[in-house]
Image 1 (cartoon, each protein chain N blue to C red):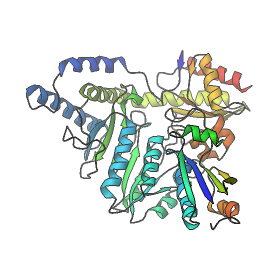
Image 2: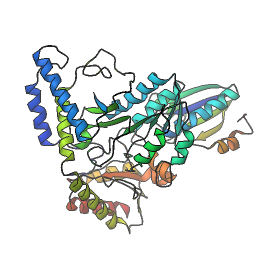
Image 3: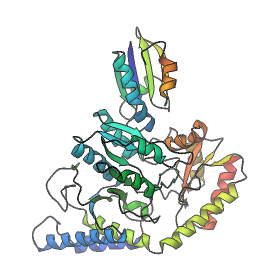
Length: 87
Length: 369
């Protein structure tokens, strides 16, 4: 499985979520790519990323299987990802 | 034309501009030059720095001139991080900071620093218990702005200072860009303060970082000792003179100016309080210079554009961030995407008249229908 994370440097929600996602990525030995709103606007468009950040997109066999938008508590993350990943 | 975007920037005071011109012609030497003209320029800068410290009533700090408050914020955050990373890599901030704070912290987070966001109460004030809980021996810096630029929340700095001072290894920075020259605050006991001149009728292009004299940080710009080793480059003497003059003028009759702005703010709020489509987001803990509200049927940017057609100029949020997304500050305060998307910031000045307030109210009511 692979993860793409869409963030921007000046976003507080991204500051909060980045370490939570990094932990999940590490615990599950996932491949990941991170894109920045200010630098990768084309990639944001290609992936239909809206105005609320960060966005966490999970892929299996190159198919998107889950998208998490915005700030989520650890409990919410467990609920969203619990059945798929080790959270 | 009705300008109500004074928190984004203020028009330069003519007296400041005249002074800028005068000293540009009078002090031609490079303050770093060792000859008479250089020494004269250097002495002038020292006089300005001493004057700024006196005006702000701080005697244990030094003045570092930068190009803007964003540079001051970057200098202190990255400067402390680099200097003290062997002591700890933990920094605390709030969810109401300017993007120049959060972006610098985002940058450091990617370098391995741990960034925590302290909780706020329902009014947006820092939760002191949570701050106490978060500070550890690894915490090297707490950065909390005195006044949030979108909503105007004035943080309880004295209580925050007390909490932080229990931890001698932890330094305290406050971005005071929205409060210097407007609000009376006790600056003693704060280790770093940043602000810029154009927020109080000075010219654009000059910022300040006040740093406690006995603390050393790493510079952002290396290049040898100028008037300070913390910011190399030829000092912008005319801008330095101008920011000093602007501060002096801003602090003149400050109580009367504050009261006028407070009265205008209350006048607008009273007129709008029965409009169901308008929700005031600023609360009683906010400075009167900033009035954040939402016209529920419209996106913030739509309100800004509609008022622009009437030649009324306001912001949908901090001018330095993207124009289309929602306000992160309002979302943090209200947890409502609707309010965050529709919020606008009206910023007032002692120059704003009751006639201006009436014109604004009329235009907002028209939009809210």
